[in-house]
Length: 123
Image (cartoon, rainbow, N blue to C red; front, side, top):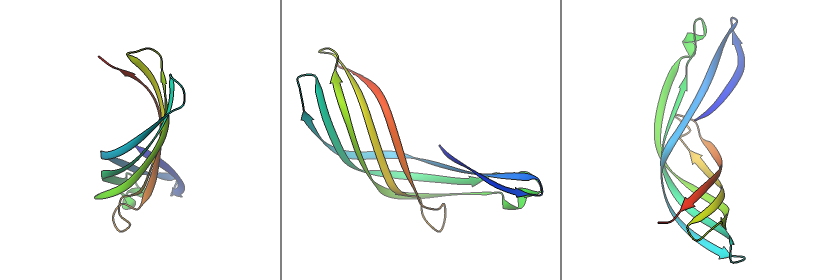
């Protein structure tokens, strides 16, 4: 969930815009081994996204209350590194960027960035 606070005061009340994108991706990736334990990777993907946008507000700002959703297909790129801890366990760090999430006339367009750290286990 991406949340943006807008400091606009409406008769001493606050409104809060909440953007909530979620979806699935289809990606192609390439790996470049640097050493026996360390590899870099890159990926290019498309992500099918449903973006929900809501503006919950309490009275008297309640006149601005509302929500909308939109489906879109957005490009995503990512970079990362994998470090081999053992034959079965890898440590993974990744950065992803997706753009053109949502639709201008409904939810507004936005971009999203994600940094993740994870562990892979092979059986």
